[in-house]
Every structure is written in structure tokens, then in C-alpha cells.
Image (cartoon, rainbow, N blue to C red; front, top):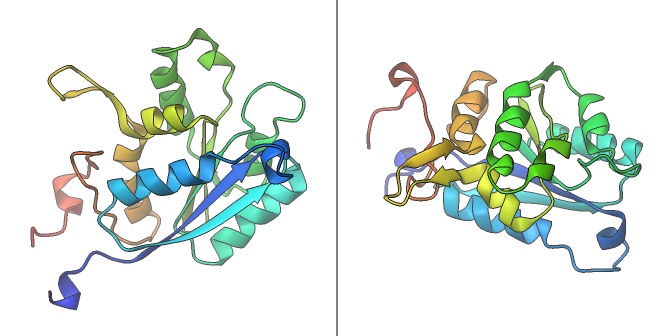
Length: 199
């Protein structure tokens, strides 16, 4: 295949935030879930930058800055977004933000509320720092996939759009690589004027 026809390579930071998993009390399931879903959802060659860290504001913020500085166009976190005292991921994320993107958190709660009433307790945020999009995701692998993919009707048509449908175009707008999705997993949406010609 002509190299010019290959999808753009992308570097993605994946961060699991958990006191207990980071100290080995239990096995982390967030990083494998994120890596598996992204590998299925994107056609782009992906370089993953995984991190497993405790619930500490300064450490989380420093990790996010490090990943952005390392060239990660997208950084996804999992865990630490509830109301418990040690849940500080949103605060640490907002602390490094240049712009806040509230629609992502609103849509994630909308999706999760279809399953559990306690989704209203979730405080996920999404922000832009430089040329990078940072999104806080839920902690459970099932909820990670649901919020990224959205909900489908019995015939496979979208019922509630997942947040990842908007990620490729957002990354276009902030100067990142052109992400190409596998439509059977999650169809990215772009205005026609932003689409590359079919290859």
C-alpha cells in the first residue's frame, strides 16, 4: 500500500487512576479496556502511552502535562470521578486546561443514566490543553465502552451517540492527526467540508 494512503499515526495517553490498583491491591482493568477499545475503534496506527497512578491531584496533573508534552493528541483517563474524598481526577484535569469542553461530560452522564441512577454522581470533564484533548472516562470497562460507543437500537442504528463520534473532528480542529474510525465500532462524524477524499 502507498504510504501516503496510510492513516495518520497517533500517540494516545491512557491513564488509570486508582490508589489500590497502583499499589497492586487489585489488578487494573482500565488500561487494558481502553487499549482494546481504541485498537478496535481506530484504523490509525496507535502508539500507546499507559500510566497507572494513585489518586493524587499533583501527580495526576503532572502526568497529563507529561503526556501532552510527549505528543499525545488524545489522553483518556479512567477512575476517580465520583464524589468520594479521594476522587480528584476532575480537579486535576481542570487544573491543566486551556479550554473546557463540557459537552463530553454531559453526554457521558446521559448515556450512563440509561443504566444506573447513580450516574448523576459522576463528575467527568473534558478539556483541551495545547493540541491535545483530555477526557475523563468512567472506571468500569463496561461503562468505558458504553460512553465511548453510545447506545444502539436492536437494528444497530444509534440510539444515543457515544462521545467518541465527536473526538476525531475535535482533534482536527485543534491541529491533531486525522483519526479514522471503524464504523462498526463507532462512526466518527465530520462535516462534509472536513472530510478527506475517499481512498
